[in-house]
Picture 1 (cartoon, rainbow, N blue to C red):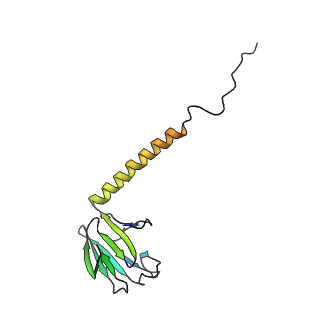
Picture 2 (cartoon, rainbow, N blue to C red):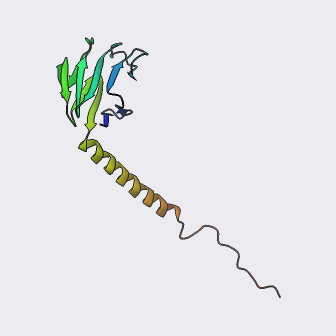
Picture 3 (spheres, one colour):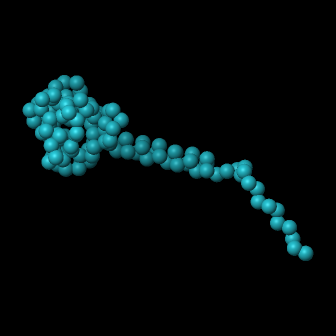
Length: 134
């Protein structure tokens, strides 16, 4: 199962590639969140049977799902996850596929527009007319 945490603040998205992903400030964490509000070992997300399970590891500033501080929670698509002060939107399953298809379509439109803009119908420099030698 593919899963991703999309930053709600415009930061980098996090792909959850492992079955168990450890979040925190510590260098041994799978996802290192270098922010003073994040605990060294903050929380863990486990992928099992098509579900994402979250467990807070006794963090100081807490882990919140949809604004509610939790110790444990099952994450659903489009849930908001706050690891201390860092906010993410949970994407997996059909929601992640929709998002990727929409992004691919958007990129294709952008590429088509760029190709049109690159084509210069009226060039600034016209070639010199070729005169026959004779």
